[in-house]
Image (tube, rainbow, N blue to C red; front, side, top):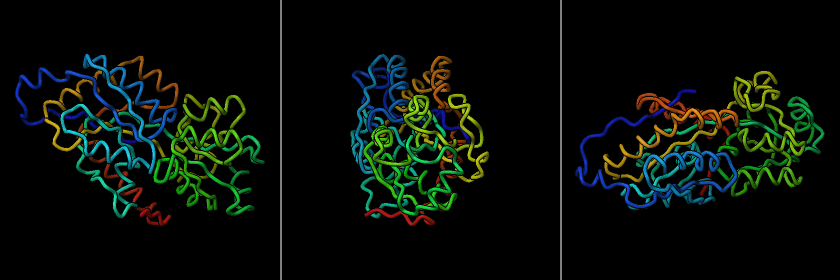
Length: 318
C-alpha cells in the first residue's frame, strides 16, 4: 500500500510572532471511535510524541458514533486555530461521503496535517463457532445463510467495510451488528453475542492468543510479524479480501499554514521514532511518511476501491 503525506511547506500565512507563539495551550485530538480500538491505540501513542515535540499536551478526545460522523462534524466546525485536530479514517474521509445523503461535513475541506499509520485487518470468530479455519467458516456460513452475525465499530467503519468486502469475495450472507467501538464489538464476540469480528492485530491477537477468539485470516497479501501463524487472504483462497485501517491527522479548513507546518513537523518527528515504529510494528501497525503526491494517489485509490464496493453492496445511510 502506498505510504503518504509529509506536508510540504505551505505558502506564507500568519505572522512570525503568531507562528512562534503556537502552541500556547494543549491541543485536542478528536478520535472518531471509542477507547481500545486500533484508531484509539495509535492516536494515544502518536499524540504523546507530538506533545513532547510541541511542548504542549495533545489530549485525545474520543467521540464515537455514527461511523465517525459525530467526531468529524465536531472537528469540522471547531475554530481553525490549530487547537483542534482530527484523526480521519477511511470511513470518515472516503466512505461516509459515498453513503450519506446528508453528511453534515465536507471531507474534502479538511486540511491534511499528515498520514499516520495503517493496520491490515484480521478476520476472527468466537471460540465456540464450529469453524477452525477460514474454509470451514465459509462453508458453515453458506450452510447457515443470515444466521451468523458480525460485530463492527459502527456503520461505515472500517470493520463494517471489511464485512461487506467479505460478503462479496467469499459469497457469504452474514448479518451486521454495529457497536460504538471496535473494542465493544470484540468483547461481544468474546462473550458470544456476535459470531464474527474484523479488526487490527493489536485488538484481535491478545484474545486469539488466550483462546477467546480464533483468528482465521489476515486481510492482506503478507503475514504479520504480530500474527505469524495466521494465513493471508490469498493463502486461504480469498485474495480479494484486503482491507487496512488507515488514519491521518487533519485540521479544520482555514487553519493557518504556519500552524500546519508546526503540527506536521511535530508529527514527522514522532513518526521517525525507531522505538515507536518498532512498538507499533510488533502490534501489526505500519507508520507512514511520504510526499503530497503519494498522499493524493493513495486517497484517489481508496476512493475508487470503496466507491465500487459501496455500490455493489448497496450501502446507504439517511
